[in-house]
Image (cartoon, rainbow, N blue to C red):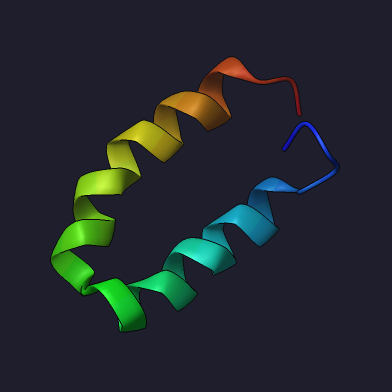
Length: 42
């Protein structure tokens, strides 16, 4: 996100990764992503 990635693009990346790493891994990462999104300016 420091290099211009939007929140929508980051969310899409997590969805895309779910098919490679498995949905349980992405569900574990979602609270971290949510915390990052909340702390960053929009």
